[in-house]
Length: 467
Ligand code: ADQ
Image (cartoon, rainbow, N blue to C red; front, side, top):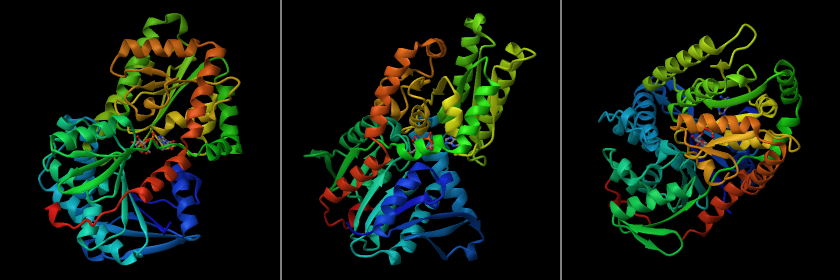
């Protein structure tokens, strides 16, 4: 294979633990091919300064970044990416802000990325573009004459056609996907939404082997559920920081069962619904009060998007009222932590917990679910309570699957999880581990890149795009 070029909104130094399994996995392929990782530096600068490409080297991997201007940040990042695409793709039309100005900023930054990336490309590069910030990037690259193979992976869900159709300019957005050679989704449900959208809205024809023809172009589409780096996460679980965390937790909560939730503070993660279900559980099971504690870590995320501050207040008030109503002098039912916890300590917390509550209202995949299962002691594993609306639910059928909108049902599942006999916990854990190992992040990387290599490229001119 030629050199791999990864493009994503944010980049990470793959040599650092904090970067996470995805960066490690991509870093591995990038290392093997002496690749390039291109993205936003995370810096917002004055217009005049924003034009340079910053290049760093992480071993054989080249990391290239550009800065954004304040207008780009407001319109591309806050406005279109996180104010339109993130809510709508997570089925939250009510939270979308369809300000007409945002789409121009979105397109402008995609053009900037294309313009800055083009001179760095080599003829037999294979380009892999990630996520919703960069949907039109291939179209912009093609407009500049880029002929290389380009694949796209969407990390978040793709909603059903009628929800997508609520986005002004949705036809442009989906048409832009046809500039790729391969488009990958997290789940079969997302792939099904894509197929139904292109059939109904773009009158596309299915061609053999998951290929779709529309706008006079053909694109290959498939589901590639992302996994974790199991070996890396197991090493992290056995490392001193995680072991120390595990021992501290076991000691502190020796008389109680721990439930854990670990999320970014985001409305897609169903945090208020989870708290209400936990409250319902406490109400219904007075005899179990004071024997279970929920630790909820909700790390700060996108605090400059307004929907997030409402969520923060709602969550704080719910946790406060649960503790106020049910707490005792020596026990508080909820420990809510609104801070980032170091990645190296998380496996210790997972392993010390009897139950994980992973109950998003919608999630592309949700890697916390897979990390929790991986961190367990197979002889005495904890139980995963998982939303049926997380991409992970297509794979982890042995979790206790719940509808996070159903408060009573979720409360009942919490009770079941806390009382599940050892044998059943072991058998569910064993089955989930098998899937998690088989479809790990290396499988994900290799199968996507293999499909991209196999995709039949065609001359992708640009006049059809009408961008
Ligand atoms: P996220 O929405 O960020 O990712 P998720 O998959 O749960 O969600 O987490 C990604 C990584 O962040 C995991 O390694 C996890 O451990 C870490 N993480 C999450 N919350 C944390 C916290 N509070 N403190 C420390 N670390 C935390 C998006 C999509 C998901 C998809 C991923 C990968 O929204 O659906 O699974 O990309 O494709």
